[in-house]
Length: 280
Image (cartoon, rainbow, N blue to C red; front, side, top):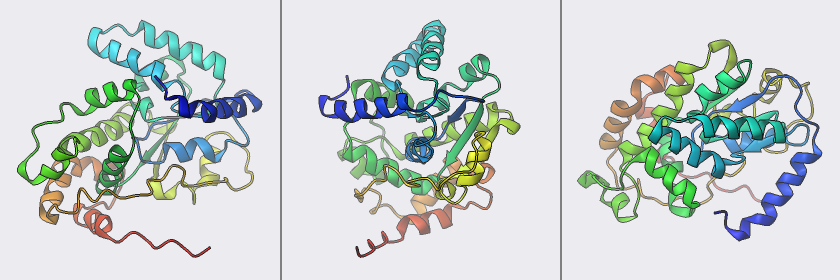
């Protein structure tokens, strides 16, 4: 159930969405994992076309889980067809979409896909911070359990994460690998645009062209829904421990998606102090 405090914002977003013209041309789906820029991608062209960020996720998640548990994909396909007909979204950007690639390619084979990717070490910190600071809906709690597994089995080095009620680091990195790997393995290369999270703003014109949109004004935002506060839960981990985890869990795929990536450089960026806020 959606918390009542969020209803006014959701209503305003729905009305703004409906005020935009219905989709023309190809559908575009953002596939990135949580905290890779899916929110930013949905807002970049919100003033021009119908865009959605995790639209109907609370309806889709139970049906994704139903298919995973029973093999019955009919309810999921019905919701996907219905929401496409009702919403007419041009850009549908959601971390849920990584689990819908097979269905989306079957239902809408000419669609285009954008994979937003953040270096796994930086992404891990952002995901941990987000998990500490945000209380998800019941549907998202079930989804997290399905994606990550039990909140147990932490190595001794990860006692701080266990005490905070979070998952083992290997579980988070397994999710990163599944999300990135599904996009690279399933989407035809001609239909896929890969974007590093930090490139979303600088490549706005290229993204517009890929989506079949005319060049236009610069997007209002290129960094939506950033995590403002750091939990510090990774600070006590030795660099060598993190480096070994990153290499073992994500190394080959990280280099495939992010040419030039290394665990050592990733950790160096993770350890860098947060930039000071510019004076007003």
